[in-house]
Image (tube, one colour):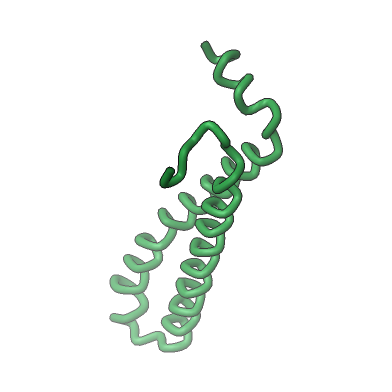
Length: 89
């Protein structure tokens, strides 16, 4: 069954690999945000460490932007890659 599944993706190995990598990176970044917010709320704000608060906020903005780029790549690459899927047809 796995061989049959992989045979569908054989012509699209590179695309499939990029799709998996982008999905994993996006998921990892999504998991990172709540832990950063927890650190921000429990340690940095009570300690009034303004420099660290600014650094964390800038990092979270960059993480959100990277996550948006990864999602865009995943959606755009998948649009015409799988002809057996109908997109709004």
